[in-house]
Each structure stands twice: as structure tokens, then as C-alpha cells.
Image (cartoon, rainbow, N blue to C red; front, side, top):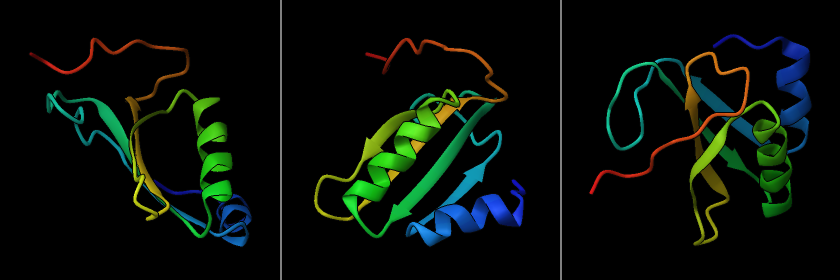
Length: 91
């Protein structure tokens, strides 16, 4: 994914780095046409702010490190422009 330098620098200045992988696959089913985003932050506060912004763009948190790593993985259907639901992990 290509972001404008200005948008990327804005998060960089807040201590956030992220990478979006388009059509990566669903986190637990592997189903095609899902996007994934890896996020690393300098502080928990910066990570929370980034996640809040991403959720307004229909990203959902799949996993957030709770061991002090200040990182998360978010996902959404490829090209999602509206709220969506996920049936959850398979039994």
C-alpha cells in the first residue's frame, strides 16, 4: 500500500509504524480478499489513538499485544467502506 508522505509522516511523528498487506487473507480462515495491517507503536497511548482512527475506517483489531510490545494486527474485508461483521473463529 502506498500512503502519501504527509499522512505517513504524521503517524511517524507520533511514534507509529504500520504496514498494510492487501488481500492477505482472513486471519484464521485464510479466506481470500481480506486486508491485514501490522502496527507498532512507541507508547500504548499512541497505539490506542492509531487503532481508534483505523476503526473509523472499518479496521478491526484481531490481536493486540498485552505483554508490553505495543503492537497490534488489524484486519478488514478488502476495500471495506462500511461496517461489517465477522462470524468469528471456526469451531
